[in-house]
Length: 186
Image (cartoon, one colour):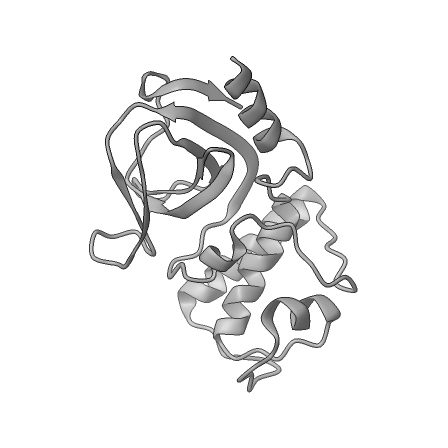
């Protein structure tokens, strides 16, 4: 029970080390797409997070998937009333360096659920929603799994916690079921 309370507090309390601010998360995803397309950031936050190395565009041309993700992230930011202060130089995004490696970017939902004490076997975490994209890690029996992102076509983007520390993130074909976990919070 002590473990449940500890993990629940890390997952659900704003500012906790493993909890991300959904507005920061959406801002990061939206701007990571722009960065990948050569955008040159002017704000202190954009320059601190993405550094402008190799940037070439003030208005990059985006493909259809990128346009959709940016529009959806922007809509969700508006719906949640987000107003990220771009004068600062840090973001509250968990496992940000690992998130940079993800090929298909997730969008935060603004809600959080956690599977504490995964009872299933090993589950691969991938950079994209397919079985051939690069492996980013794995879920193992006993891990805590955080669900904070939209589920897409049978794939969930999850974050893994081992012994209270972020230990991985990626796309997995996994569904949060009460019987799959010692406990479910959120």
